[in-house]
Image (cartoon, rainbow, N blue to C red; front, side, top):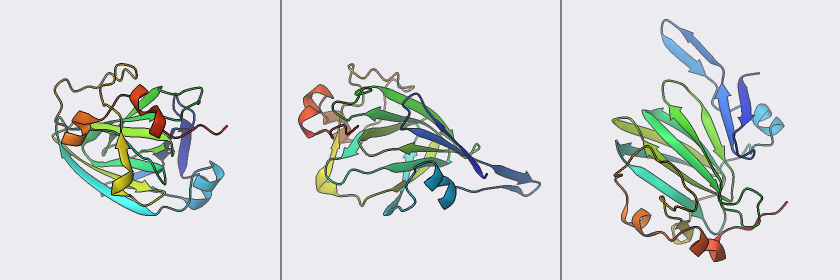
Amino acid sequence: MTMRITPTSLPEVLLIEPSVYTDARGFLSVSFHEREFAGAGLPTHFAQDNHSYSVSGVIRALHFQGRSPQGKLVTAMTGEIFDVAVDARVGSPSFGKWTAVTLRASEPRYVWIPPGFLHGFAVLSEFADVTYKCTTLFEPDHQLGVRWDDPAIGIPWPIKDPILSAADRQWPSLNESVGVLPRYVP
C-alpha cells in the first residue's frame, strides 16, 4: 500500500496520506495511485489541474460549481493552508456542517472534496502554492459561492482580517443559496 485513506469528520471528505520515502536527498511520495484510488471509491480520471498561488492572510472561499459539480483533490505544494469543506447538498444529514484539514508542503498529504461540497482555504504561511485536480472542467459562468464567514456554518477561520476577492466578499449565505445548491442523493 502506498497511501492511507481515512475519512474526516464528514465521511465523504477523505484525507489521503501517501507513504513518504526519505533519504539524504529529500523525499519521494506517490500522489496518485489508480488502483488504491479506485479501491477507496475515489475517481481515477481528472479533467483539469489547477494551481493557485496566494500570500499570507488570503482566504479563498467558499466555492462550488453549480452546473457540472467538481470533485477536488487538494494539496499544498509550498507553504501551509487551513483547507475547508462544507456539505452543501440540500437534504444531506450533514448539510451545512464543515470539516478542516491543515495541509503543509513539508508533510505531503491530500484532501478529497467530493462534488456537492463547498471548498475554501486560508493561507497560514508567508505564501502557499495549492494545486488541485478537478473531476470536471471549470465553467466560469457557473462558479458560485457562499459567504466565507456565514455564522450559520460557523467556521473558526484562523485569520481575523483576511485578504478576500471582491466576489468572496459578496457571496450570499448558505440559507440564501438553497435554490442553487446541489441536492443530496442517498
